[in-house]
Image (tube, rainbow, N blue to C red; front, side, top):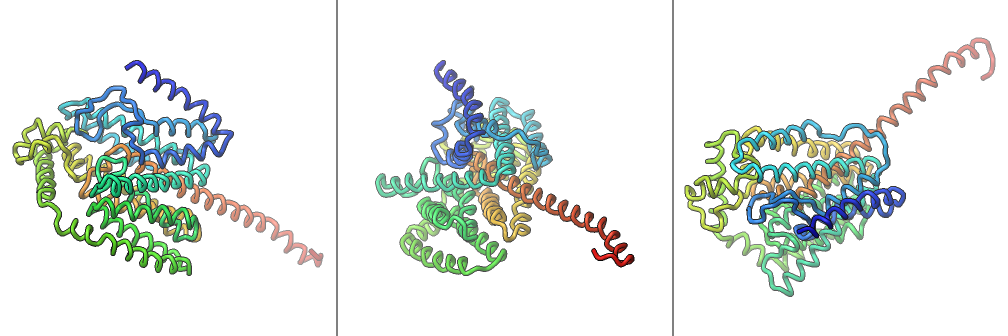
Length: 457
């Protein structure tokens, strides 16, 4: 037990010297940004330390943990130059949701479980703030973060291929707990690589990541992930064509149709079987969980407390009321919005929707306004990833899981950082133009006087 805390203390202490070294070594700072995108794809439960945890609980947060991702965030913060950048974006949405989480703890039957979730949210906000400041200062760090996403996808593909063709898995999970988690995670981040490919940038690397994402999602045989992968591909494709049609995009479209046809022909039997012969018990279980969530909301209009659904389901009589089998008595409703309603009431759901809408609107505005700028293409990818994640939340609670939380708030930092950087450039450009115009106006009377006196200018 002592060794765990000694190792943690040593690791935390190392973040400062590593960060200071990275301040003078851009390559090391770029590596830290890449790791933030990659590490959530690794079996992160093996890379954390629980200061105090309840591992047998089946909620979305199991303890006061610190992971290797948190250490990378701390080191990246130290590596950044000490420059004033103004406040971190989305203050009102973030504070609103944080307040809703804190308020819900008052209704919790086991407050400790709720404080676990609060601690994870604080770490996620910290990651968002650091990524935002890093990308705002240097867009290349945003590129490094996106490269981390791509490396994570390719890493997962290697694991998935091993599971499928060596271990004989029907639905691959890679280093995640469930195939749906893998599919939803991939769908969140792969659109960034796809959008950059269509922009004519990172043609080989981005194409590899996009192709790997497609193969992975097919191997998960997750119905929601399969459908929403197609939605994300189309959103980016249409958005990119709206931004401008090029011969490269037409070529990529033709290749995509051909390659997609080959993959579908190879996997069509499994995909069709997955959609047509899906077990009825799975859908029935989802309905029972949603019914239990609705019943909780009716009994507790302000919610039962964040990270309390599993406890209330088992100990509040709802598992018996809805006839859940033993293995589902302390599970979680597969619907992020019903989960939020049950745990934090209508105010909590409103806070979640506001928090989700703010970066989505930023990505939409950036993708529309930043035409001719590859950063706008990255924001188009962020827009597609956020959109399908919000849609898949109608069928999953994965967004609350730690790896997905890291990737989501990392993507938010990338979105806000790139857009704010572009806005700053526009303001500086406008100020320069205004100063030049004022200088011309000041010189104009002199020119007119010279003309009146017949003096050549």
